[in-house]
Image (cartoon, rainbow over all chains, first blue to last red):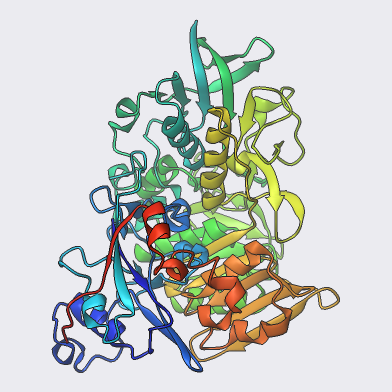
Length: 155
Length: 447
């Protein structure tokens, strides 16, 4: 399993992780092209918090005992066997928001345009998650770990 | 007579969750799931999509049809348990068959309340909790122009929202002075009622339906309803959504119950070998510090997992739950948990309003006991988590409703260890190995 962790003492709150995450998920790696003329930001999985001199980049941690999977009313939130990540089946999600209510990190939100839940998908289409490549201060690292074991999950 | 190590009565959120948990611990003990419905476990909240988007049962199923076989479980669809014999430890089924069990889980859920209104048995009167209900509503829809939904709770709103998608005229009749009165506070109700009306549906509050009428003496079909102020509403369909009650019939005389079946923190009833979870039982409400029936899906899943673990011999305790709801209807995002109607003598209340929504947090003696959020609900999970942990937030409570509220608003002690347990140890090689971390690495820089 591969997930992104943050060294909060190195995070400078620049927000590049969020910008590049949103750009990448909007379909173009160049933020200027992806984000141009949009009134609201495209769906991304990162929130950057700044509080005084401290800052932290927050995203889904793909918890082993994921409360969002337990709480999901429709089976849309699921554990992907191959990657070990917690992912969302967009066809099943009805955007009720129960997952947002139980996520201790506030890492899931409802996308205004589509009305369904969005969160970090781990950039499975890339060798390295986009945010990690974008962090100028090496505050974001990937953790590689043997996949968590779970029993059969809905398709 | 067949003997099973585990028999689970009920094949929805709680039953399925328990069966899965049992199979993670015990892969071979005989396991039988009894279901009075014909379908594999499916998502009940999705049934509204059958009406609004003609989704079929396949799109709602929580497990693939091969799941039961692949997990070495027997699943008997269309089978109703009618009687438990104890101490013989058997269950009698509707077709006369009888099965013997070592441990039995009652995950029978709840059934819709059918209020004693005159004419309630007429054709065109439906409840709305199963896929079958959704199917019969959809079948009747082509001949329907106006629907009266009795009850403005979660199920009533879900039905009304789905029917608006089919462009049917909908009137919600709510007995209380506002809709969703158990789930949100007054301001939340007002916002929801506004959204319902904006969608073209009508809401009548503070009124009861006293009779469901038919025009033709020879036909039993619905043609109107009469309210307690004698208003008559034309309609060809009525949906009953006044609430649900635990389906405890099977357990009567076998296990002790109050409003629901009584269970301890391991989901055991007082009768050895019998367990219960989900809508049918009464569990700890951590926000109100009282026992209550908490009929919401996530609680059934969590309780089912605890029951399954206990049945399979690895008991762990249920952390308790509270009322929690999320309403995705009529274009709104509303979530709530715990106490929503505060008592000024007991509670402290923090609120924030802006153009798109509002947030309210209810505290009792410095501990969060409830919340309502309308609009941007993404960070309410942080508040819910504090509520669950009963963290004392008195010293910094004003942060909870600030626009920039987040993890960093919390004192270090509340998030560094608890919320991000691994991050603090990133630089310790021994710990990394102990946690099974193979590699930590940063990426090549690309902008």
